[in-house]
Image (cartoon, rainbow over the protein chains, first blue to last red):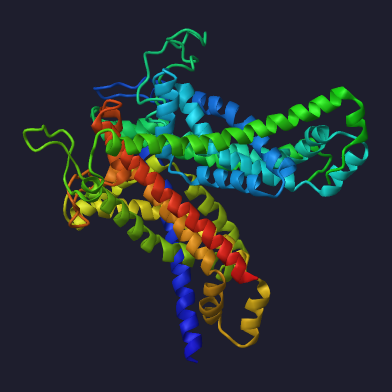
Length: 296
Length: 308
């Protein structure tokens, strides 16, 4: 009889734990949105940040975040998929492969600030670039490659063996088999991986404060020549992203409405994370339908 | 598997493509390996410069309790004791793991054993979402919600180790939960069925069977959480108060290894002692993270051996 009572009590305890978790999540997201969403307006989303007085917008940081996301994905996706293909198709069991896997595992668990410091040394100091969006994008690439490699490898490994064997049996070369048979079948998984990676890159700040800097030069939003120094598209200029901006306005505390600006920016970040999650869920299904004749 | 396609060998063009493709993927992997090697090489060489170039005593560095990098020679020389930061890092790491560990594992047990199927379906995205929330957002929430709450209801300034511990607990909770869920899902259903068949209640099955079968997975989950807590910089920096002294209470402002690096790296000149000392802190962080990573690998291997 006693055992049954304990069982009941513990069931209640487990329900309480689950409830706590859900309350934390909804409390957190609800708080950020309740504080931040009223702040969102076109002028806030597009306005430039101010360094001393109230009334900052997040236009420049938001643009920097999106542009940085684009830059880093340009590097991360091809290299990550390449690494995934190597591990799924070429790597033979042995010391070398073990070492490569260990390296990927280590890289994925290193604190982002260590990756940022490495980026500072290599992409800021040794290259002589100073703080640049490019340096930030490369640091983010290092930080995100393990996730991209792992999801690509899994996606390629999940392709049925018969497809690959049929292709090889037809006399098609290994590389052709990879690009024309395995890659299209693995694409839905790769797309999901890429979106998850993008979501992580969008919110990252610690790896960026020492690589892409904490401020932007005055930008001329009519100048779209990537080589001109005032152009927003110039990848070799400093640029603080949205996440860095939240940290900066709070820790420097130079503007009187820092909390309000950070609340608005946090709401934008959280909404973006929600969007990336939803996208990751639906994009792979969409790609799957596009690539195959299946209706599911 | 490794059959050489006949046509590829016959046509030199295809053969070349084949080779180039392989080289391309090898190049991708090489970048990752070089990056990891580079990180260790650079952090070690910069971090050790403090002791070999600037002649700072290792023991004074590790066990000194005074952090006064700008003190002049006449006033007793600059002092680079980082023990308060090391202690701060370990306090927030262990306390947050002690809070988030049981809750995270409990939530995982709820999701796999107790919740009806729809409950698990509802909680999975909740966990994924929590993992994805950027750390600055956790920091900002801590700063505007938690710090004032602690100031008014618990005491002190609000900024301090306690705020850091709570923010980190919430941050690592989803990490611990999702890894524990994976561990529990891997437990063979036969041993659970066996337990129920013997008349055990659900709690008895959880406590006597699942807690043991999932043990290595739970430890892995908690170590992953600790690694994340130890390496987290900005969220902690926003709420911990950045005190420089040895922490004596959870309510006092303190610092961790990561927050000191974050705060000072931008203000010091590259190559100076003040700057090299920060790299030494980064070296400590790197070494500690490596310990966490290899602990996880070791436990993973042992766990697999035991389950056989």
